Image 1 (cartoon, helix red, strand yellow):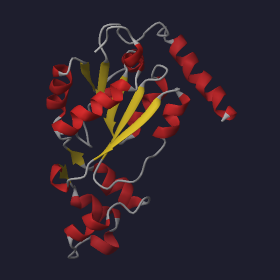
Image 2 (cartoon, rainbow, N blue to C red; image 1 turned 120 degrees about the vertical axis):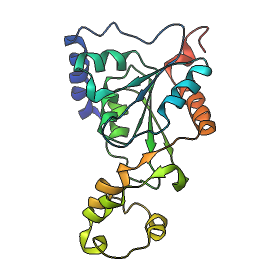
Image 3 (spheres, helix red, strand yellow; image 1 turned 45 degrees about the vertical axis):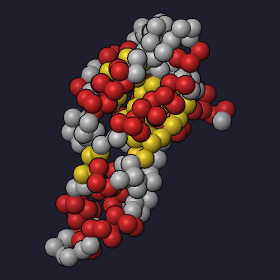
Length: 212
């Protein structure tokens, strides 16, 4: 919408104020940035995923955004073709991506809450994609958070975990924000490969001569 353009200009001015408007993705390789969380919502096989991306010929770096300065964050984001991360506010940094870069949101098992990330990609003139975990055996669920989110129903009471997983994210409220989105996940390598190839094909890298 036209009302979004002033906000888009605000982010562009922030990039300019940091002196980073000249930073662009490499001319030789597609570059993937993988958000590395250090407190919660862990991507449990992130090092394996980096290795796999590199084996496909891409440059791939881990981004511990919470440990980086604003300058460091924006400098890295401006150099990316694809930004990948587990659902969470770190993905709001998509507003600093280059034009037509790709944001890939990794959604935990049965999470339906997309938050603001589709809008963020629109503000950056970027592309939104997502992947969702489908195997609960590859997720770590923190059941104490469910009990804290809804103590009247779960705290010190018997409940069927398999039934909770079958019903899935109620789409909003404390159960979504405390329990469902705070899973730690594993992304299967075969799905990761397919996801990366698809993301890079939609990114600026696909238009650069001789790039992987």
